[in-house]
Image (cartoon, rainbow, N blue to C red; front, side):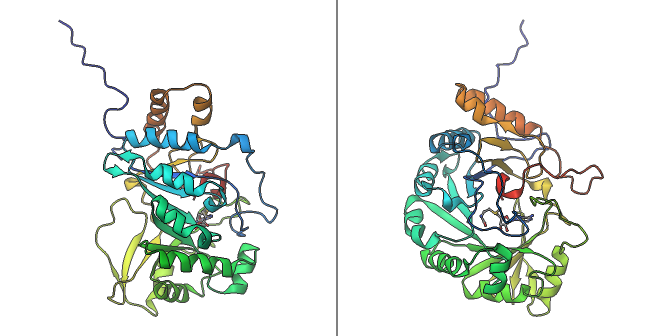
Length: 342
Ligand code: SAM
């Protein structure tokens, strides 16, 4: 008598790793280029950009997203580089929002610096975009120009106003906490976010800069951000965190919340449900991964959807338990945040 069990299909079961983490959240970087040059992210002259033929086409992005949706992904966050630089951004949103996942159409959101958003906000909403995260590290125009090396503060404000008017909620603002750069304006940033009906998230600076000059000794820990905020606001922890990277607090007992994403000092890898696709079609199972899975070559050499699914499952199976920033042998990934997709 045969004891062989029926062979499992690659489509069966959730996208789960060795530690039982089920993956539902896909970050797609649409380009490695950006229209800002934030000093902590990119050198003034930019980086050696990917060639056009190395970038995933919109058809290829849609195909990979469909395969991932079949494997259990329910949400997509578009990022970069700056995702709004991509000329066909509205089409990308429309096509991804039409993909059916296990829980209905995929939820498509975007992380952007807000430049150009005022011109495309209505079209993005109509195409199915569900949420926006806008990055803003300072509300001081001169400081913004210094930090980003561009005079784009008013363009970002126009983008933010369009996002506010769009009605898409929650609208989030992301600020990287940086010593000597914006650590004197955490309270002001929170006041600004509340005045714009936005939820502020402070992000600990991570070793993902192109210049490799990050230092644990100068980074501002989330605990210090909270201490500074408590000088002006009462903060009360908000319920269960789930797979969210942010620890969230209710501000002054009202509707507004503020969050801290303490990736370095209080990692949340145990609940990570994220997987990343770079603009050149490499799948990364972690921001800090040192290996990538080459979906681009597979796509362009006649790989089937099953082949893609096998490669994706293998990448997730190889995911490490944590990002390892604290390990003595930690090595910063070769690619900076702008090329991986933040
Ligand atoms: N251009 C878009 C934007 O500005 O949101 C998307 C890409 S950007 C790389 C995504 C986010 O990563 C931004 O909020 C940025 O401030 C953040 N970021 C960049 N380098 C970082 C670092 N070393 N540590 C923490 N966050 C970083």
